[in-house]
Length: 66
Image (cartoon, rainbow, N blue to C red):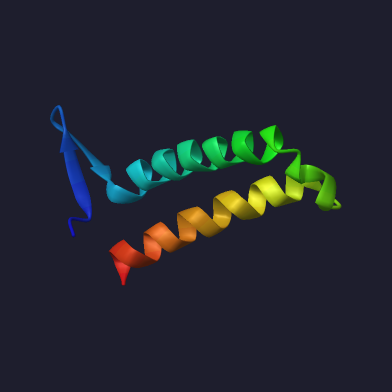
């Protein structure tokens, strides 16, 4: 896969787009977990949100840069 993407003459690393996509996906999963009251099973909901984002972003980065 490409390591850089041209966007209106500006070269952006693929990681930037993956970061934005992972942030949107994590936000959607966060809203879903909150809607089914899933945060009551976790000790620290903010830590779960961070770990969810890191796992999504890491999995996407590994598929591109491996």
